[in-house]
Every structure is written in C-alpha cells, then in structure tokens.
Image (cartoon, rainbow, N blue to C red; front, side, top):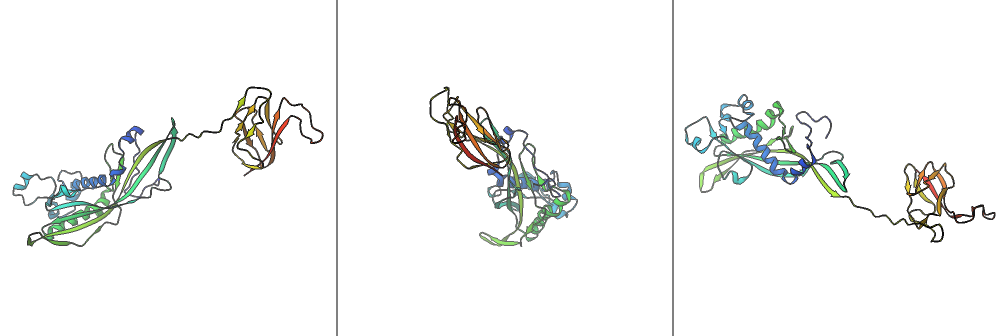
Length: 340
C-alpha cells in the first residue's frame, strides 16, 4: 500500500503485539467476516437507532425510511403503516424466505495486489523465522433485495444502492473496522452496479409474485497475518585441528580449488580439514587479498587480481629452494582470482 492512500481509504492497523496477532488469525474467514461487516454497515443505516441513520433520514423519501430492521415480532403485530420489518441477513438460513428482505450473497473471491511484496517483515529469533505478511483479497458480493411488490423492491433496492454509492462517498465511510480486530473491509470508490429487476411466481400461487434486484459490489478485505517456522540448520564439514607439531596428513581445502573466483566486497570463509598447529597460511600479494592468521580462517578480498594462497609447515627447513624459487617450508600454493 502506498504511503498516501486514495481519498476515503486509510492505512491498515498493525498488531499491538505478536501474541495478539496470533490470537486473531482470520485468513480463512475473509468472506464470512466481510459479509458480517457489510451486514452491520447496512444495519447502521436501516436501524432507527443506528449510527448512520441520521444521514439516511436527511436524504431519502419517507417511503424509503419505512424499511427498518429493529422491529420485533410484537412490534409487527401493531398497526404502524410508517414502519415495515426488513430482514437483513448474510446467510440464507437467517432469512428463511421472509419478505421484504436484503440477503448478502457470496459472489466470489480473488487475490488482491498488496504491492511489490506481501511480506512486511521477516526476522530470525531463537531458531525461529517469524514473518509478518499482508493478506489482501477482493470479495465479490451480490446484495439481493426481495419483496412481494415491484414498488417495494424498487424503493428498497434504490435505498441500498444510494447508501453504497453517493452516501458512503459523502460521509467518507468506505472503511469498516471494529475495535481490537486485525482486519479491515474497504468499500469500493466506484463500480457498484444494480441489475434489472426480476420477478418469479410464488410456488403454488400463480397470482403472487416475488420481485428481486441484485446490487453487485467488490470490496477489499485486508488483514496482517503472522507465521513462524524453524530455521534450517546447515551442518558444515568438520574442520579438524590436531594438537601436534609433527606428523599427520596434509591439510585439504574443501571449498577452494585452483583458479576459483572469489567476489570482491565480502569475506570468504575457508573450510580446511586436517589443519594442524604447525601449519600457517599466507598470501602472495596482500594488496589483492588478506588472510586471517588464526581460526576461523577467511580471505578478505581487497581489489581485483590473481593471487596465491600459501600453506606453510613450520617443521620444515626455512630458506628458499634455489631450483624452484619457493620457500622450503611451503606445502601448498593455490591460485585464485578476486573478481567483481
């Protein structure tokens, strides 16, 4: 997400603590949470005691205001022509065919684009790799409005359409979140569509009709999830150090071969088997690379060039061999290259 979100949007809330986030993992509940959020949001307009009821009352007709969600069974028995019980449900079984009603139907889900990388943070701690990642999906919803009257369906669906378009934009209510939750539902800034009305005969009654209209929206569901995994431990070959000044096999370099290229800018750790106290290392040209004088042994590249790594044996005679020009106590010399 960008540092400056679009108008009507806000940046996500980060968890107060890691343990708090682990307690509220909601990735598999994205659709049901989104439907519940939309249900509560619409109820805040349709319920006369809702937080957003005042905005609706100031902008729509008296006919639209008659559809309310707070009436109980006893209230419905009273003769009140100005109020009609409206069933607002997020699942089919919550409605059971009662009309007029507003039913929130799952219209599909697709992966969202959190930016360059969904991973916000990754650290290693106590042999565990812990990461914080953004979970962003786009949830499609179809809000079905149904009643026994063409006029009622037209008015009620027009009210819902007005809430999700003009009214939401006017009061900047695109973001839905609840206290102490680690998710956020964002209503679209545009793209809300209302389908043509349809009607179907009531089963067993050819004269009665059910009139319906669907309003399709696509909302963003975003949460921050955390997960952890054990860090894989890599076991390096053994580096033998024999506490003796004579005898023993010649040391073997496990990760350095003749004419090998070593990149400039980072130290190169040497893995050596059978290194003994009598042995020491040297470099033919210290301006190209340096070598550590004691374990752990590593080469420090300094500039590009070709250089020799020397292995000396202190138990051998000192001096220089006149035939070869090499020191008598030189056991091995391995050429390598420092490159970019």
